[in-house]
Amino acid sequence: MPKSPKKPKIRRNQKSLSTRSIHAGEPRKKYADSLMTPIIQTSTYTFKGSKGIEDYTKKGKEHFEYGRYGNPTAKIAEARLANLDGAEDCVVFSSGMSAITTTILSLVQSGDHIVITDDSYKKTLEFCRSYLKQFAIGCTIVPFGDYRKLERAIKKNTRFIFSESPTNPYLNIFDLVKIKKIADRHNVLTLIDSTFATPFNQRPIEFGMDLVLHSCTKYLAGHNDILAGAVLGRKDLIEKIRDLHKSMGGTIDPHCCYLLLRGLKTFPLRVAKQNATALEVAEFLESHPRVRKVYYPFLKSHRHYRVATTQMEGGGGVVSFETVGNLTTAKHFLDRLRLCYIGPSLGGVETLITHPALVSYYDYSRKQRYALGITDTLFRLAVGCEDPEDIIADLDNALKK
Ligand SMILES: *Cc1c(COP(=O)(O)O)cnc(C)c1O
Image (cartoon, rainbow, N blue to C red):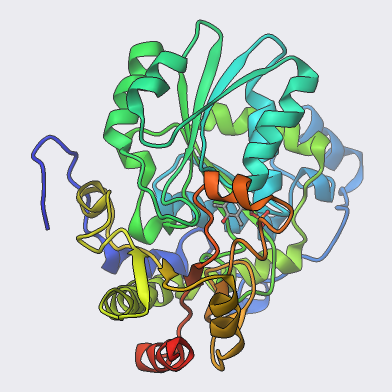
């Protein structure tokens, strides 16, 4: 793997990451000597007499008051997530989008400006482009990978740069070292959506990013059964976000939190397997005569291979590819799949495939789609935890003419 001496050294600490993903954040002794973290399914909490109230309100003794302000199961999830990414603190939310919108709103006021890269998650972009305007917050969308344009977009009132890496569906990789330098020159914050990478493959805090966002719905929970989100980073920033979260109310349910904690225990196992499977599938697709182009950051042919292999542990579980043919042959390919389910999302144990033109961009004209690079024969495969040979056999069969 190519390595440049200028880049910070990544701590190859996967062994300890596995241990921490099982144990971090939870007390060893739990309620009723339970091994598992109890689900504290309550909307409110009680006080022991007036002294209990005053200990909390006047002396600042730690106490839960009401579900929207905190929950013990959620608190453990926050401590574990912060630990895995090496962050000072964390807040969990009812979805990734709740984490993203609450975080953005907590950092800006009217008259401010933000910079965001153009292949960020569709709903994040929509929020920045359409809704921030209502509060007189400016937003410049810059082409991904154009660091000069990005730097030029920064104004006096710019509060932060928002980016994502890897991105959807082309798995573009944002150079964290470059972005940190630009941000420092202009004294702006750096926010990164690290959902596709997870702390197994990438730990942006080690590169100096201020805030890291995750849709925990994907790899971290990992079973396609809950929605959850998180923001992690500097304590002072997280405190601000937590305050607004109490008003915005995107509170995660305690049972959901438990499922997140359970998913976290196995996420390094799953992501390690998904990294290996995705690379194998990507290599298979690249050699297939009916495949025109494959996008996977750990393939030498990917335009960001160098930066990907320098700042990431693995390429992740998503492989995008374009087949030869047209929309009709693309539909035939989908119809012949027997193992891979057709569906959006990623990061669970089941392999999912989506056709962005038919699903996420169905409401765009062909011209608009092509301008974004969403062609008629583009697919995004999110590998699950099935064995690679079964996934490959399914794809191979469906690709047959
Ligand atoms: C899914 C996703 C989100 C949104 O998360 P939800 O949990 O669905 O709200 C944000 N960013 C990225 C990169 C995602 O993949």
